[in-house]
Amino acid sequence: MPKPSRICATKQEFYTLYPTYVAWKRVLLKQGGTTDGCYPPGPRSNISLSGLLAYRRGRLEFLQSLAQRYGDICYLKLGPHHTYFLNHPDLIKEVLVTNSQNFVKGLALQRAKRLFGEGLLTSEGEFHSRQRRLAQPAFHRARVESYATHMTAYADRSRQRWQDGATVDIAEEMMHLTLAITGKTLFDTDVESKTSEVGEAISRLLRATDTASLTSIFRDLLKKLPLLRRLDNTKAKFEQAKNKLDAIIYRLIDERRRSGTDRGDLLSMLLLAQDLEGNGGPMTDQQLRDEAITIFLTGHETTAAALTWTFYLLSRHPDVEARLHTEIDKVLGGHLPTIANLAHLSYTEMVLSESMRLYPPAWGIQRMALNDCEIGGYQVPKGAQVLMSQYVIQRDARYFPDPLRFDPERWTQQARDARPQFSYFPFGGGTRRCIGEGFAWMEGLLLLATLAQKWKMSLAPKHAVALQPVMSLRPKYGMRMTLKKRRQ
Ligand code: HEM
Image (tube, rainbow, N blue to C red; front, top):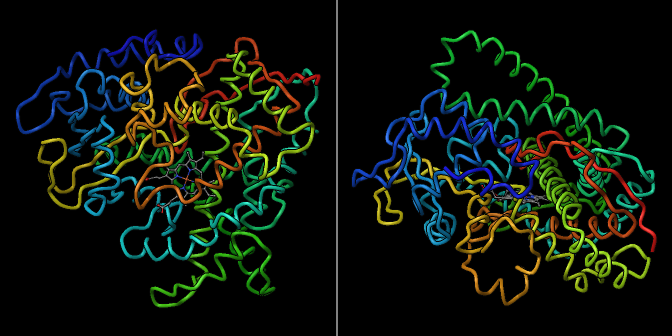
């Protein structure tokens, strides 16, 4: 089990992690370590309920400690599930790309389906391939680039609203901003007036989904406990929030179908899509709802998290921040950034890449084996769970020496070429690779450049920074930062 001093990038992280470290040390010491030939090395016995609760409190540290203790492939029994945790880029590539047809999302997907229905993120097999074909044109480069002006206009609106010396929660600010941009690019609608209502519904949904992920593992056990009443409550709240969002989305679909016009947004593209390779039909209202809610949720939370951690890291590394400002001032010359500027904002891109290395918005990927197979020389049975974590591998010293150091220089072309594929995979890989990757890069860079052009931020004194790995890697207590207007 690594000491927090070895895995924490900042003092704040250290102090927040220490209690988790103590809890985990207890769990791992009790479990012991073993290899019995058939299985890869890993904790000997089934992870207990107390262990599972500790996992919930500090799952990233737990996964990191497994990697450090047991190596490239580790076996553990999480509740009733045989679980293989992979810590080598080649093994990850095998599951996501080479042998991807043998893996489905499985358990993780069942839980997420309550929220996303049969959208791109959660569907499987032929249905997923069809939906991906139908949605692809909406993410075509030219279409995505047409959203650049919306992105900078919304970022400009935020930065104009900010007051010099004010302390704000940057995590919340970024969520509002990316939510407004998703509303505009997906539905051509200004959700900003309703942001708090929609944002709150989404937050509640995500919290409920997270609770469900713990309970599914020990559902039978929990049925016998009084805790169930609380879970029932959570379920009711989840349904309420979901119904509220659904109502908004169905109303928008209905309005658009009746108007019959291409408004230039993603919804228009989804409505117009015809599956020429398959049965040629368009999407039904239900499919449109599932895809819209999928893009709505996946499209704003992850990018907001990436930007939040980037501003946090910049505030801790004034040298990097100064170099970023120099590039932005030189390339933009005081104007709002455009698509044409992106090719010249190379340091800005290196900063964002490095930030997503240390704080990957998608921190882990889970799959289930459809048939018996072999991974890393071990027999993996049908039905086994396979875990891979961007957070763990992207902090592995074999690929990123002195891994906790925030160093954008790791992203020169030469340095990238020297590293194995899948030592860095913030957007996943293979057929399930993020469809919004181009959108996310463009949005991340444009927003970072627009906001950093006018503002610097420093962490509010005594603000605790801790990780909350839910759907995305969020800062657990938000990110309270004081705004300082830049004098150029
Ligand atoms: C920094 C921002 C983002 C990160 C780090 C990210 C990460 C990911 C990852 C890792 C996956 C693959 C999950 C898996 O294999 O299980 C994924 C899938 C997906 N992402 Fe993103 N994403 C981001 C932004 C976006 C945006 C902006 C959109 C839409 C506008 C989006 C839409 C999707 C969709 C629809 C899928 C499912 C694709 C499929 O399975 O075919 N993402 N994302």
